[in-house]
Amino acid sequence: MEVINSIKLMQEISESIRYSGKKIAVVPTMGYLHTGHLSLIRKAKEIADIVITTLFVNPTQFGPNEDYDKYPRDFNRDFELTKNNGSDYLFYPDTKEMYPINFSTSIDISKITEKFEGAFRPGHFKGVATVVAKLFNITKPHYAIFGQKDYQQTLVIKRLVEDLNFNIEIIIAPTIRDYDGLALSSRNTYLSTSEREKAGILFKAIETVKSEIAKGQRERLILNSHLHKTLRQIPEIKIDYASCAIANTLDEPEFFLPGDEVVILIACYLGKTRLIDNSIIKIPYSLNESNFKEDYV
Ligand code: AMP
Image 1 (cartoon, helix red, strand yellow):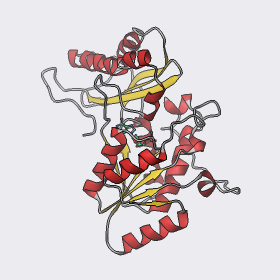
Image 2 (cartoon, rainbow, N blue to C red):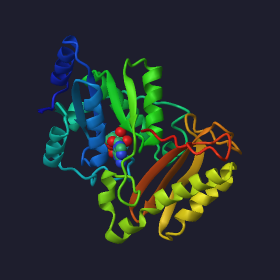
Image 3 (tube, helix red, strand yellow):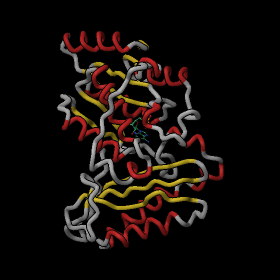
Image 4 (cartoon, rainbow, N blue to C red):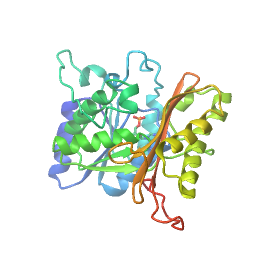
């Protein structure tokens, strides 16, 4: 596996791979890799000839009071993991390379970015959309793999690709979870031992809502109240949002209808650590319908 720091060199390499008729998949990451990231790299290797993993902790997607400076970083470990999981190139630029002094452009996607993460992290999706557009232009992929873990981000990227006519197929990979259902995240390393023990409550809250839906509950606010009630079993949790919405639009109707794909979204703080999770479930047409799990697989 080759490490590439230069945008120009990465573009030349990608161009020549495309010219040779091979397919490129890109896996954008901020590093400090875990099994979730590695599952994306392995999926990329299944569908494409050449995998480019990108490693860049993008400052513009962090708010002024967020954890950019203390975001965990370990290049040597990430290098070994990407190499051993089938990545052909690791694109690893520094901040000056990505944002030279005169850099002035940003991509602002409306509507889908306005609620949930967008409301609690102003400017976050502007940073994400801009850096992802740059990474697409640098790595020139046929496919780009993102995790369902960052569900709203997947909607933002799909909108970006459609609106700006990137000729790239977006593939969403399932969320990889720990033994108690906690979604793997680089930020989980911030959790103390006792916080880590409590963090399984997010998954439990999601499961509670799924079982309410299975029992026939369709009223959004009641479903939301089940989420909140379960999360509040851990008194030190501070909820940013815990809500059900229509999966592809994030609309919030009073009642969900049969056939609706509903996303259950949670963002909360456990101590100083912000955790997010989600799951998608299809509202069944009848209560006997058993197969109504709709997460990405
Ligand atoms: P990050 O390094 O947090 O920016 O994440 C890079 C990519 O990995 C994004 O597409 C994430 O959605 C994805 N990802 C993060 N955590 C997981 C997980 N637990 N399972 C699957 N994909 C994940």
